[in-house]
Length: 225
Image (cartoon, rainbow, N blue to C red; front, side, top):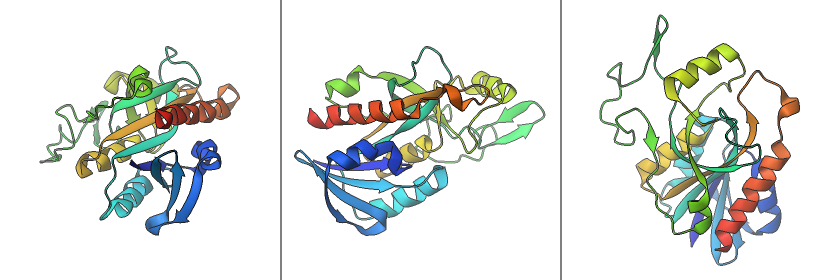
């Protein structure tokens, strides 16, 4: 199996990088690893949706992969998700793209600017319909995400985005990853661990090391199946 593993930072997949067997450097910033019977090309995109979309598109040119996996951390809008819990983000959206009209937010659909982009569902969401036989993947909680340029840390903006989109989690890359995969018709998985709750910013309540450890353990479980 040939896997395309995408992460915003090397820190988020450091446990994998230590355990997998390095093979060689590839073009477009990728590195090739072997793990079990799988060949895994790793791309570290940098933080944010623009570098994620650019480097993924560049890396996928004339390449064929069985599956693409985005591994990272996320903030949760719901205390129903525990810090360190692993989730499968099955729908995502670029929540900030649109226009303000007074207190109202207008999406690209509202503005009639989306035109014929088949990657988007009718409600302006990107939906991952990939099906996996993996027991580990199928045991994960499926959640709805939003992708942002500025992570939320102000109560007013948090309440506004909750009312607009009813998201479960938030990242800075997820929708870009999913958009590229949908357009390239690649089976994909957005695998994330909860590192913090979306609230007034207080890093003392975050647990990034736990989230990184757990999401990598989940990745190993998937690869070992």
